[in-house]
Image (cartoon, rainbow, N blue to C red; front, top):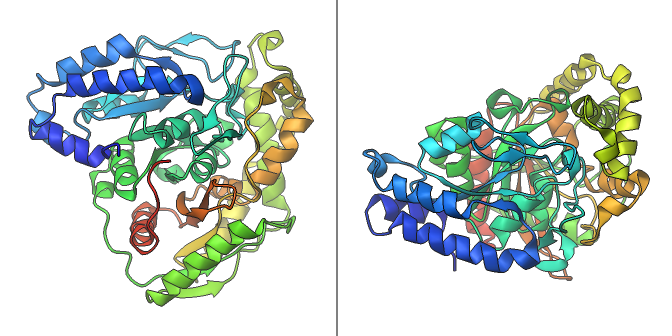
Length: 435
């Protein structure tokens, strides 16, 4: 069993593990296993080993929270000396310096072993490109999700213990649920990412709550998040109804939520079936931003280099840009805040449908990609529009062998509460860390 990030850092700090030897082993594992999984766009083999060698000489080694921990970074954040592509042949940007989250990872002692694959412009919840199809380590015939699919696959395959991701409409939570991981996106007030009209935020993927919390604490530069406390008695709302469409949700996904609800009620929490007043407007606001955000990002690019599905998505998005209004997000956030006056946490399925198969989705039309994408993310995107912290926690297995996740949502400032409740679930309903 691959050691956790927390345990590895403790051993490196104590001088029990040589970080250079550890990273050499990690790189060798990636080079072997990733031929099947397709998690990494770029493996920093020589650079990572050199970083680990320098780490041994740091005077503050005994104080570093991620000392010697191999970390994968999503191909959206600049790593000095590397290129950022966002999954597109139309973007090749050389990073002259580290992105802020990469700076924080390095300062904490992490070793950046590679950049993980994303779908083009991070639009889709299926990660593939002409070069590779990223597969779910639990069931390689299925996608690992997206857009943080490469990061999720890397952690689920045991190639790294933790990874960085970003989440615009579920891009951390969806692949976390598919790959049996803990995935948390911080609230917009903690770790917002530029672009997509404020929808996207940074976050972490891990196999344990403690590792997800440790990684998030470093990304957010909030050391208190690394200490996972007790949740206390919470007022919890349970909902398995897809906002607006009320589309049917596969029974195994709703059954996982019901099982979690029973466990939490038996542990003393107040559990009620309820949901916010969603309405049509926020769902429309999400769709407008989902099209308009990539269109804004593609401005100035040679669109002939974009994949056909992306090119069409961008064309629609150019028209949608005129429809995006900040008032939509404000009004939905006000309704969400109204709902959370009565509850501390909302729990729902993470996925609204079963995951798509692993396939060259980039070769299919925009519509063929958009329909399963919209259906899959029915529970997740609204919380990006509100700017609320949210996470996915493993909660069972589907009869086909795939993991099942449940989504936990809290109002702004609720990251520690979510992590505490997730840790309680980890005790009440333990999950298998790796396939």
